[in-house]
Length: 56
Image (cartoon, rainbow, N blue to C red):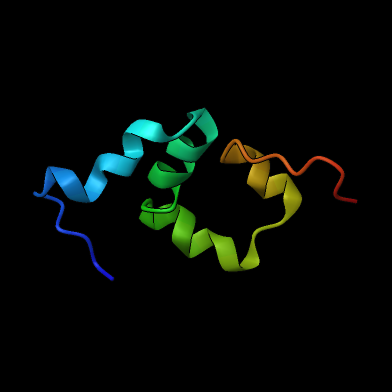
């Protein structure tokens, strides 16, 4: 479902996000990130500030 970016109530949940949640909301809307994601390696993920603790 597409949100109405002009409606403040559609984005009330943002007020409750922690730092990583807010970062994800911004990152997932970035067209360069979306284009790179399907073939992204762990090394490339670091350039976006992503970390995957415990992942081998």
